[in-house]
Length: 382
Image 1 (cartoon, rainbow, N blue to C red):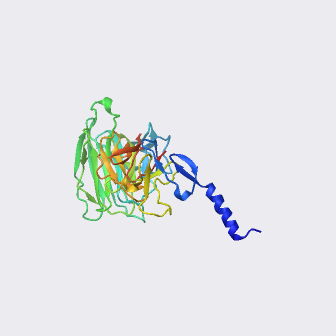
Image 2: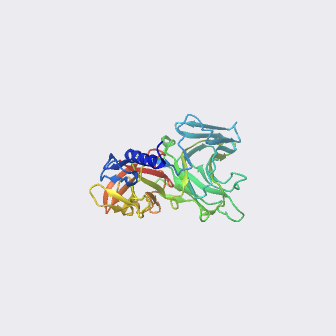
Image 3: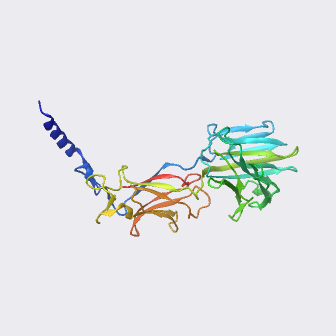
C-alpha cells in the first residue's frame, strides 16, 4: 500500500498536468497560479448588462395592464375607462371623477430617484380633467403618504397648463396657485394625437427636496415650482386622471414611464474581464501580490491602474467619465458631467492606455432599453 508521501507526489503531478494557462488566447499546460491574461489591442469587446439600475420601466407594449406591476385604482368605473392600446396606457373620463388610474406595486427603498413619463390629454366641455404624474411614499405603514405630482390640464387645441400639487408636512408647500402654460406641438385639430409632453419629478435623497418640471416644444425643461420638501422612506409612482365637471369629456394617455436613481448621485459600475469571466489582471506567482498587473500583447507588463475605463457619448465626441483603478477590474463611472438630461441613453465604454484605445463596446438605446444610472455592466475582452 503506497504511503502518504507517494500519494501526495502522484496527486501533485496529476494536478500540475491538468492545469491550463491562457497566453495570447491559446490554452497551454502550466500552473494556474501563473495564468496570465493577455489583452490584444483592437480585439473584439463584449458587453452585457448584469443589473439594471432602473426600478420601473414600462412602455405599455403588452396587450393589457400588467397586474404584477400595477394595481388598478378606479373610483369611478362607470365614468372612466382604463386600457392599454397602441403601446399606451389610455384613460378616458366623463363627468366629475375622483382618482382613477394605476398604482405601481413595487415600492422602492431608494429615496434618491427620478420619475419620467410622457403624457397627453384632450378635453371637451368647460372644465378639463387633469392627468397626474405622481411620485409618492404611500407604502403605508412603511412610509407616510407624502407626495408630489404634476397635474396636466387641457386648455385648448393650442395650449396646455401644468401645475404641481403636494402632500407634505405642515407649512412645507404653499405653491398651489402656481402654474405654467405651454404651447402644444402642432396646433390644429389634426394634431390632437401628438407625442405629448415629457414630464419629470425628481427627489434629492440628500436634501429631501423634490423638483417637478416639463419639457417644452423647444426641448427646454421648465420648472413648475420651487423645490418642495418631501420626506419619505419608500417611493413608487401613480398614473391617474381626476377632476372635471358634469359636462367634461376627456381622453388622455401615459407612455414611456420609468423611475431610476438620480444621475447626479449614482454612477454606473463596469466589471472588466477576459472572455469567460476570468480576471483581466494577475497578481504574481503567489496570486496575492500587489499591485495587480496586466499584459498587453507585445508590450512589457503594466500596472492594472494604468488602464483607463471611460464612458463616452454614443457619437464618441464627449467623454463623460474616466477612471483608473487598481481595484481588481471594477470601475465606478460617475454621471455628474453627463450631457444627458433624461434616461435611458446610448453610450460607449472605451478602454485605453496612454491615450491609445485598446477596445470599446457600445451600449445601445432603443425605446426604454439603454443605459440607466446605477447600471452594472460586464465588459470582456475576447
